[in-house]
Image 1 (cartoon, rainbow, N blue to C red):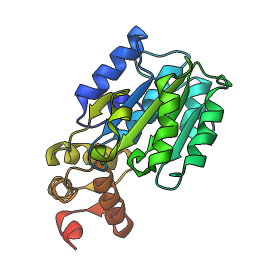
Image 2 (tube, rainbow, N blue to C red):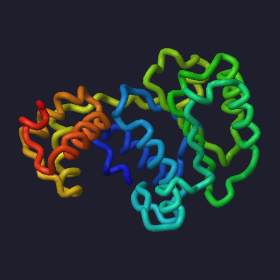
Image 3 (cartoon, rainbow, N blue to C red):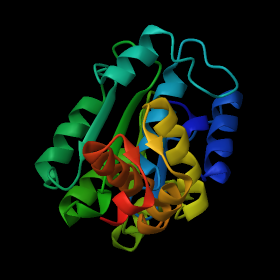
Length: 226
């Protein structure tokens, strides 16, 4: 819901919060790192925070209509595009046509392009045209697990943030918090085992916990191993 919820990426969340507080945000960001480390989550929180009507210390208030609609996925000014299924040049042309219009309700229109490395060469060229001279009201957040496939011309126009793999103990700590919120009885040893199995990905850890909780509300090490 907020930057404080993001596990183990303080070098990124602190910088983004400071940019929002000072009003010195960039027009394009690139979030890179292995799966499940918080790239898309951070992109959504950032998009919400810069448009929040009453931000606190760079964090979204979570109470205003903008925050609530962003959380519900009903805010038309935050546009998420999955490049894996929208990789053609026509998809990016459609984006370029929408970029020229001012936001309906927000200060900024934010485009979050997930797995951006999946775009075709012609689609990248079309995106580059827009990123070279972006309108004042537009922010791009590109997320990728394979940054080496993103053209240097795109990279040079973005602020780059590298997400680290999350350590097993940090994952275990977060799982124990989630389990407490969800009324799941999670054994400490089980949390640590899931943390190791997740291999640096918070999302994988939550999926494992979800699977185990589907079998029993009391999750111990034996259940995880089974």
